[in-house]
Image (cartoon, rainbow, N blue to C red; front, side, top):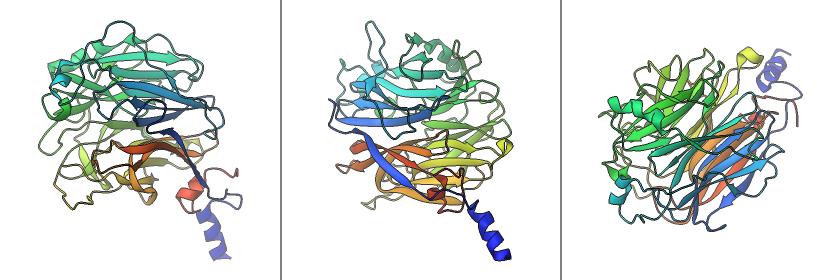
Length: 407
């Protein structure tokens, strides 16, 4: 009997759902007039609508002709409407002059880049995006992504950074941003002087924030500088911890090939000394982090993380600080606020790259990620599709944990 009781405790409950996972492609390369769909992002709104977005590229270049497309689902990701463009800044547009030093750049291409969405607790969806990696805009939706306000330029919020870092290139996120329990909106950003590779290096990571529902935005402190140890920190995700502090989880080109983490009490200032998380490998690729549940709300503290769990190359040419094969997209689960990651399970063992995570109202976990590869580009720009995986905690934990008894 004691053994049986222990087994039931481990499995959660007799009514726990059966493990399940299903996948569907939401954007497929070489369709819809675009060569490549990249930078997937996903959020669940207050009314349960799921929004999935990406960059739609007419070629593979970061500085090429790029639009931002969105799809909506009102049944927790089972079915989706057609993609539509949600970013349009009227008037003439000037190419970032630092991009013109990059080989093969067409000066007439218009680059919309690095969309970030935040689904707040009141039902508003806040959106930031960039134009030519040098201007930043804010818009919002009050109807779960059906319609959007006119974009308002907020590039002025970045001017404060110049006193400590004279940036020429800026980028928000990408992936989703967060709203803190006190209502503050937080968006991680990276900044570059534009003098290095692809005009994206060297770089540093920081945040911008809003305390008035997106009306005004402000610059925080530099969170991760560029040093010999922390090389070119860039694409970053954020999460509010159970104690109200904010943790950044940072991609970099550091020789340690591990994700960088740093903490702040308010998500903007007083960042702790960055450190490497030895459990999170860094092939030099975007990752995602999201809260699954809180102990204070009657469950457990659970945090999910995803990225390609790999630091090898098929050609054997590993070099410290240089990109590794983007493959083996893996989900990790923490029960102690990202101190340890006892659960680790591959989602796609093949070539797989950027990802973003969300959790539906009923507790289904969504991972929106790029998968499959047409060629041998280690930069990850030849992926076949952006795919949505829907699964439950029972699948991730092989039945050892459960969020809901619903099937």
